[in-house]
Image 1 (cartoon, rainbow, N blue to C red):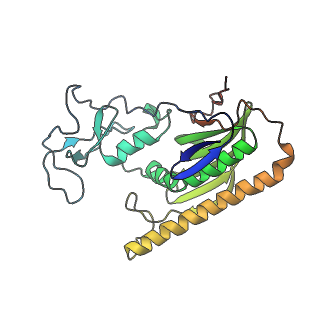
Image 2: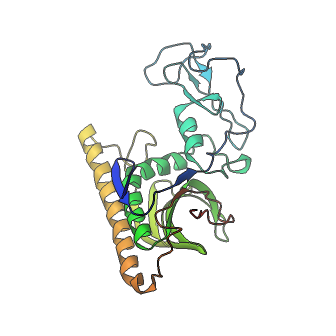
Length: 283
């Protein structure tokens, strides 16, 4: 038995080991302002007021993010509050966004300044990822298939080209996905998240207030805010877990004989739907 961890959840899978690989994270916008390579970005001092709440330091460097309309992020960040990634200084929001989105997050889909949807979706995914990944890995081992974890990614959906952000968990065989579980937020409805099993909606729920996005009504106290997030998380997990269980019950007769080459493989895959499924054989 080979123990691994998904988030804070210990998981054990059978077989001769689990190989985990990750595709490169999305790169920063091509037109960003790149500081000199010799600079120490962590400690370099600038002359901008820091944009962090309650920080009065005038030692900030500008955030390097530029949106799809070529508008630079107007914030500055002191050494204590700046976010360093891809060899540049970013505000925490745009730095985490670049680190947490898929490879196709390039020039044509750079997020507009003020668009909180990918940040909201990344936060929601963090709330449910450990439990959901463990559940899907258990199912992948049972079905002798591979678990593929798609990062947060952008898509234009349907004939109306709806701007949509999605995070997905999949178990796959060589020909493609057997089960696909996802959470989706449309830019037209940024305050609503939809849970889907194989593209079938199983829950639409309001996003609770959080200081990272501000959607919804702000609770009267910190305790009420925490309770609202906990209730949201439990309802979302319950709907997805119930949907996974129903899918398993309805498809038990479709399980094929074991293919040991795929058992327990975990892939942090590309979200590019046109690419071949990233399943790798052992040996």
